[in-house]
Length: 146
Ligand code: RB5
Image (cartoon, rainbow, N blue to C red; front, side, top):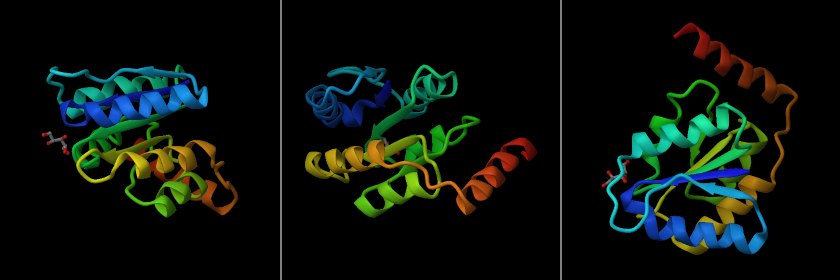
């Protein structure tokens, strides 16, 4: 299952991504806020990241205005590697090299077409492992140290 969440700045794009996941037959759970609701991005990040670290969700998508605030908040959760991406290459390589488990982007930054490409490549790219696994382990070690 893919968890998805958003703040009030990203309702429209979240809805488009939900429709896209439906079309693709990808199982998802929408934790985000709807039209007319106010939702602070740290709260949206927290509920979605909880679903990832407790194993309910395999990966997640988080959207706010810039994608930055929600990625900063998501990365406070132990076990989360959230990447804020507004280009295809970064969304691909953050899976290959960082084993990112949360994709973030900004509704005020990317259009729906690019957002769907980012989702596709993020969900369909496997972690390369090897030398990158050692580096991801160093990140885990940092979580223990601080
Ligand atoms: C909300 O207005 C906005 O600050 C938020 O969506 C996000 O862009 C923060 O990083």
